[in-house]
Amino acid sequence: MSDLRTRLDDRERTIRRWLPVLLRTAAVLLLPWIVVLGLTVRGHFGARNLSNSWVWLDVMEVTALLLLASLVRRRHRATSPIASATAVLLGLDAFFDLWSAHRGSAYLSAQVLAYFAELPSALVLAVLSWYSLAWAAVPARQPEPVD
Image (cartoon, rainbow, N blue to C red):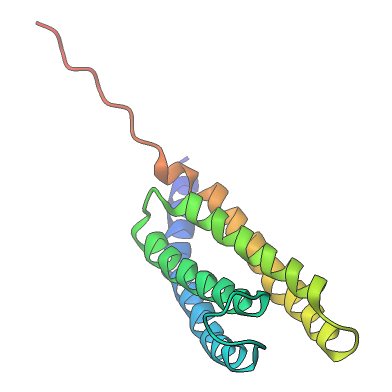
């Protein structure tokens, strides 16, 4: 039994060491895309239109990924809800990219990003959300002896 527990502890240490690195890398890789998107969207920055919402959706994703990297490293109890919210953001991004892309190369690139980046990442974060539920559990307190 202790061998199984040791393997599980090793797996969790590995997850807590490498997952934050991957989350930060994903966030940093999104930054150039946000700049390109911000420079190419139609309309004026700050104007109320759908084009600017793509930029802000990606900014929310970067923020959530960086926050999640910090929470996973510390085994924080808020990891589960933040991971599930980030998974939803990535799923929404994939959906709206596919829904709004025009035919041709834009639609093909939206498919590639959705099926090979956004949706698999959302799946990993959904699994993390389930896995980290135990981190939120408060250990049972031992009753104090009554004299």
